[in-house]
Image 1: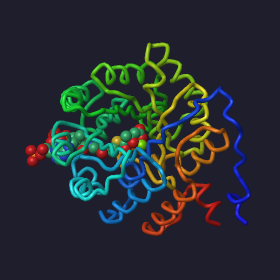
Image 2 (image 1 turned 180 degrees about the vertical axis):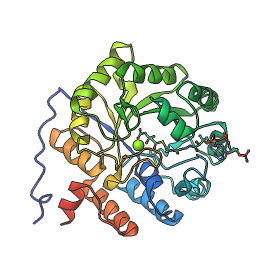
Image 3 (image 1 turned 120 degrees about the horizontal axis):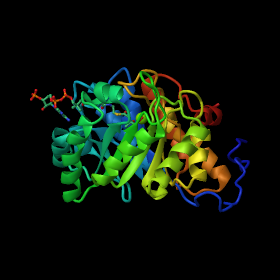
Length: 314
Ligand code: HMG
Ligand code: MG
């Protein structure tokens, strides 16, 4: 008999020091697949999205309307949205960097979009061909137009804890970028540890800095890459500060093609195992999710890096 049938992980009643429910923002189809060496066929992407929705995930970040030369892995964004099999109660946010991206996303019927800013000058140049200040001139009209069209707009901030070219990133610099996105109309901020160098201490410090600057913790999400194995500890630190939206990627797929040393995101299965043990609601069927990730790793021809996927499929 497997550990799941034996009632593991043991579920402790929710003790009030953590949020009672967490929204899992699944980024595997976007953050994961944008970093694959090969281009995954659109049929495989569609089935992956379908399987994730059937496993109970309600926010599936589906693709990006970025320049197809910059991210050829997601050049099929129009076809993907046109052929999407939408599930009731599931939203499918997409990334858009600029007006051209928003035009394409609106024409394709997107209903939730995300802009992605950098907390550092070097990454703004490498990821957006822009600059720390100049990036806002690109995002502000996008946010305005998207909000006017009735869309929610998430704002990512990348390199929140460290940057492979600039080193430690000051919390004040991250707060300043994040607040500019909120002031411009973003409805939620996702704080990205693009290269996975945060620790529980730096997560606590950054969240405190946002709250001290007047940002409600309910407007913040966390986005951890697991390069140094800290993503789960960092998530627990964020939950203890009251964060209720956590980004993760099925099977631990992920990375960023424009960030040196960015590896996979926190695996959704590892997150679900943690939340189950803590008694925090999330609405995901772990066994169905593991099945979806095993199916995807078979498509990609390599095993999932998620410890939970490996343990449950061993
Ligand atoms: P650029 O080359 O400076 O663009 O790229 P441009 O504005 O100078 O335009 C040049 C040409 O590209 C024009 O065509 C535009 O129309 C076209 P032309 O007039 O020469 O024929 N163009 C586009 N075509 C299609 N879709 C578009 C688009 N925009 C311009 N959207 C740009 C600037 C921002 C477009 C480029 O740098 C880009 O696409 N960057 C995206 C990089 C990316 O996707 N990175 C990964 C996502 S971020 C991430 O993973 C981090 C995150 O997970 C959080 C974390 O982990 O921290 C979110
Ligand atoms: Mg990322």
